[in-house]
Image (tube, rainbow, N blue to C red; front, side):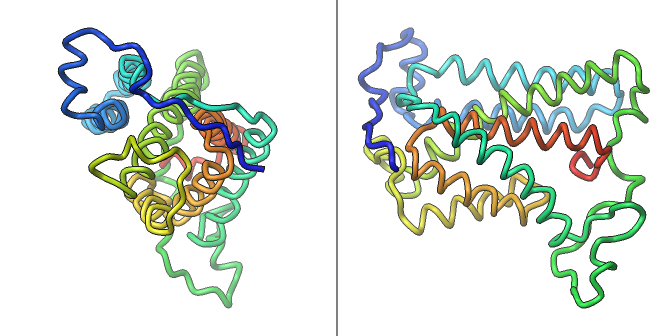
Length: 261
């Protein structure tokens, strides 16, 4: 059943420092875009760092940097809504399972020495295939199995389970789904308002962010649907965090490094 609580608008919240108000006043979209874009810029900068030791530092920097920007602008966001813990757990785990299984079928994942598509002789691979195993990012080969390896896992899984869901949900669900309905006055659009245009375009645009784009689009459709159902940013942040945590634990336990290539 849909949560009918109307989220409190950002305008009802206390104002911030004068310098921050001067930035946000003429650019109401800035608080929604800045954390996500800041996170992406730090990923781009990190791509130029080849030393594994400093790569670890860049993972930590983008995690802290993206979160710091979200905290800076927090007062400008609408109410986060209710948690819906059962939905968070069910959808979080379900999407992680879907991500692995659907990708194995659709993108021909290389598993146990054989391309999945080769096991299905009737299946014609339409979307390209994953990188060869030698191109996967295996942190054990980079850091060994000592304390640096465990620090890397804590930083990468921790960031994927906290900062990533916060900056992405604020951008995609709290901003873009509304901006695609009314770009000039997105804050007047209620959270969770449905249109086919915003639903489909938001889902398709996710392909630009996710290398495994076929499941990225499906994932965004599911998340959008959950958002329409709950109208809760908090629910989506926690669900997204659970998905990333479960997926990355699968990657480490099963050494399924294709998702870290």
